[in-house]
Length: 83
Length: 83
Image (cartoon, rainbow over all chains, first blue to last red; front, side, top):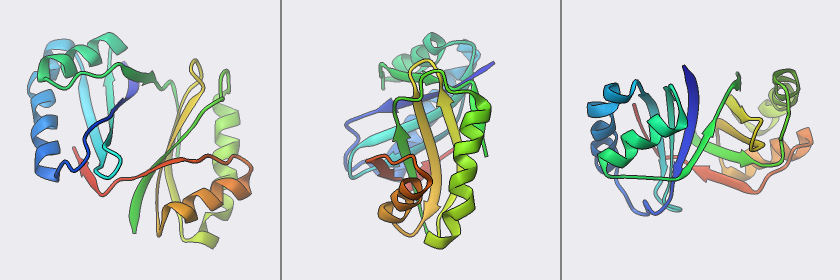
């Protein structure tokens, strides 16, 4: 399983409830693609959302977002992580 | 304390050891700004690095990166997080 960060734009002014509802639409269908969305962070001022996920491929992650109704094309595979 | 994601570009081909060394330069001085860098992720193919941190302000986070020798201008405050 690889790890990914994808980025969405245009979520200016979105609330925590709205982000949670969008994230739960991903969680509801992610298993069909072997994906898990771990966390999502929102900057409501710039409208950026960052989603951290694990899964078999970029394409699988993007398919979940597509089906859940919030597609993006900006995604990065993250083979290296430090803390 | 607020949470932040900052983004760096140009790290194409960087190794885990190199990312760890850069991250440890942040950790060594972060206390002076009241910042903590929680995690950093690297996509060595695109050269993107994402750093998740907490601290008092965007400016404080960016000052740590500046002093550690890897400045960026792309940073987002993340008041909303879901998992």
